[in-house]
Every structure is written in structure tokens, then in C-alpha cells.
Length: 106
Image (cartoon, rainbow, N blue to C red; front, side):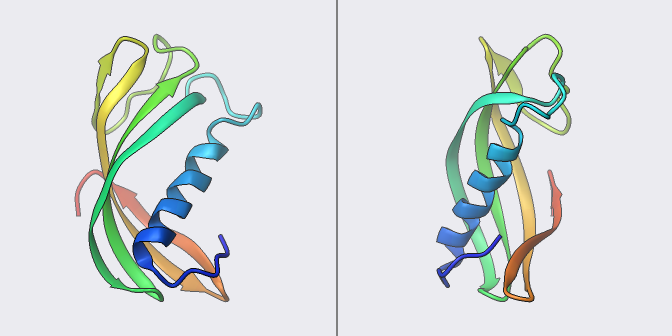
């Protein structure tokens, strides 16, 4: 992802918006497709605009709550999966931000 921002919190949010939008596309299989999401919190930012890590708390609304693959963490509440979280490591490579790793723990 390319951005003009050098603020790692802004970049982190942009990365997650782009990532979640990929899971809303028609080409995504039903078990992974979402219709909506919320970003509850981004914090624990460490590093600089060339390489950094952050923690995110978020919720997802899958297309079908009964067939969604619930991996890692989170809990089902009505048609949403809430209380999900992840740690991400991001690096700037050739002017673009790339996710190096994403997991439920550091």
C-alpha cells in the first residue's frame, strides 16, 4: 500500500482499511467474506515509518456467521465477531507498506 503519510498510527489504520476491504470483494470465498467491520483501537505502536509494529482490536460482520472461519480469537455476538485482536509488523519496501506478519500474539 502506498501513502503520503509518515504517521504510523495513520498508516496502520490505512493498512487495516485496505486489508478489510479485500475481504469484502465478491471474489472472496463465503467462509472468509465480510460485509462490514469496525476498528475499535490501534495502539502499542513501536518503530518508525520505515518499519513498525502495532496492536489492533476490531470486529467483523461475516456474510454468513454460521460458515465463517473463526481463527485465532474473537467471539460471536449476534451477526458479528467481536473482541478480535492482532499484532502486525509492517515494513516499507520500495515505497510501499507491506505486512510482514500478523498474529494474535507478538
